[in-house]
Length: 516
Image (cartoon, rainbow, N blue to C red; front, top):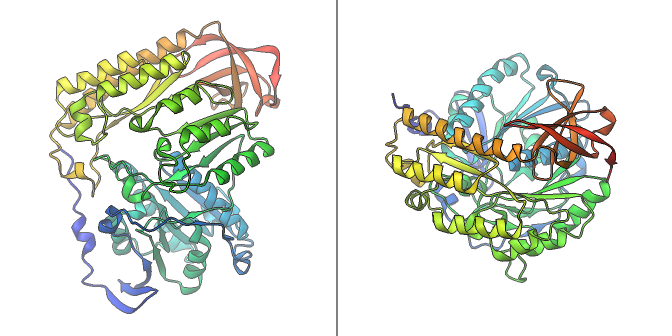
């Protein structure tokens, strides 16, 4: 039986809402006894428009002096859903909260503020958040002074914000992806007004530098750009994250140098489409290849990036990545489908042949490259033959890993109005067959590593056995081996003894430990 389509229209019925006041700063409305201060709200029509306004780079102090003690003696929790970009946004929010005096806790009953940093990529991510809100309602009833906030990509969707205002009046703050830096001000507004505060910017935000971040561990994420201009038909991200905006190279390089000084062992450069970095600059000719070439010279042991779009992956970048050094030989290259006709309906703007030619170029320049990918099965109209093209492409490329998904429509995307004519049982069967092929190639690749000695960055203890450590190779493969806790955060040489499908086992090679 097909899943029932959600009826969002009921969340737009504000016939019972009363406008209390309205001025240039927003409006105040009352719904079911709760006052809501709407400073700005998401507008899907505006999100579709790519503004001509110049993006400004601002170096403001994020937390004004008068807000720095507002959280003294109070605790916070942030629950993060979705991609690395969301994880990185959470690091920024933690940094802001801690500058305000808040301290972290894992115990909900001790928390004075709980934020849900949400993802809008798939419907099940959205369902999880609304389920979580249901659990938090009881907590809010017990402790009316608890501040509850919903932020991230879901907050950029009109239907979601209206649903929260209508059905979840106990939420105190809703803010989006473009105005995270406004968190201290929104907390003050919610605390002192006792009203729900909604501030979601549909216009793309400016680039805010100097925001505090709370990073943990030995690996760090570094945003190099925001937004996406690709408009793949299935994807909500261009609406939730806005147009492409690149950070200035000097700001990115200064941040990476600072991370190197702090002793971080690995950085991952982040963007919805890192290959488009620099294309929005009007005053300089500086591309992602140039940035990687400059970062290559900084004394940080490993540099990764995600995510790439095949359309923008150019020869200059391949040439720079082939120089190796701290630029690792792992490339995540989402293909989404192996059939040109499906790729066209997805508006990926490349063909199967173009993608395979790109893979050939990469493998020729970087012979030991490890490729991973994203694949969607059951896209509207996908035939059995078109799905077989995806399987044959996976076999031809020989990915070491793939994130595989059943297509799920997102409200507001072009694909959402296409006829979703692939039955769910067919989608599930295709996903299983795809995963079997991916796993087969992952195992073949791991088997080839038997007897080799690889460099592993030790991340911590194995979840299942305190005697066993786990870490990752340059190519991002997970390795388990026995060793002492003193090795965590160091590089070790490990001889591979027992390859598995999802990870590989090995033995540490004595006298082969480095901290650099």
